[in-house]
Image 1 (tube, helix red, strand yellow):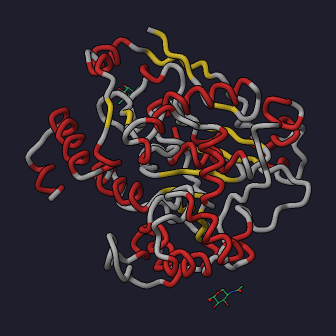
Image 2: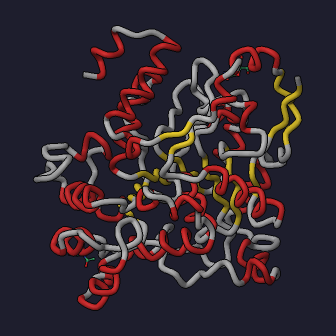
Image 3: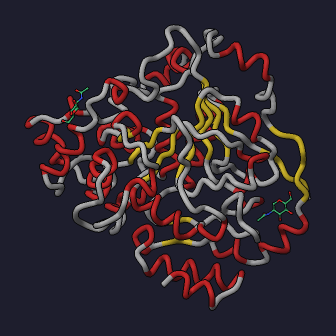
Length: 384
Ligand SMILES: *[C@@H]1O[C@H](CO)[C@@H](O)[C@H](O)[C@H]1NC(C)=O
Ligand SMILES: *[C@@H]1O[C@H](CO)[C@@H](O)[C@H](O)[C@H]1NC(C)=O
């Protein structure tokens, strides 16, 4: 059906049709907001913009320093910086489990998490689906993001969102020099290596966002999600599909039932299906992120139940709770109107605001955490 659609439409019309088609299909719950003023003359504006080469942080790419950093302690680690600031100290809670694993399933946990709908709990999910998925996350490697932590080392992470700010940024080398690189959803790499790098250590998604990305960004060369050796996949358990897909992925079998029935997980995640390749965020972690950092006013609206932090926000928060130093690239900044929605867009289009995310709130959070020196947000000025 999508191919048929593509044959009959071109460029701008095609984009508009896409928005319509994807919305109709229930892509991200069928609601979206476009800020109207951005539609007016967006293309003209783009022509008048010249990208300034000055970048807010550009001291990333010192190879020799980075080679040593693996074994070296951080000068001041992220946790130490947080401990030192009372307003952050009471916000961050490092004892909430970031990842779900087999030990987290028990009768009492099942009862406790019945109080919250996914992604914040297990309400409405079949018990056997949740338990059988979690039981497979029993490898010691599932206990943490990095398996065994290097004692005393400094783990430096880059989290790469898909924002248009990365177009022409030349941050690829700096990104790849981090110990671990997180990517998510439509992370198109081919043809954009100079701007976004090539390395992917973690790929984060919900089954829904992954499959939608494969459809929506296919024409940008996104034929498969990153599958490099040593990659780890981080499932966001947003609905029953994620538990079913995770289970089938680790078992190396076709999806037996439900929305993704007959899908072959190896076409997404590659032939190797060792349990240690797969991780899933813990519902408690997602709920904690929502309650402490991203409690949106959208939650109070009629469709508030569809609200959840964006995939990018959850990946960045995951990194902030696991790494010693974090840099975020391709995330929303104050001047987002100067950039296209994605770095791979062929024509500039405004950032799309979906009703199930609160990008303005996320934007304020990144700005605040950056200014408090918790992590570095890649920002860039443009001059007219
Ligand atoms: C994990 O569970 C699977 C399936 O029940 C089992 O085959 C495997 O031996 C377990 N692995 C560990 C490390 O306990
Ligand atoms: C990407 O950046 C180039 C200049 O570096 C610019 O010509 C092009 O219009 C940009 N693309 C989008 C979609 O903004």
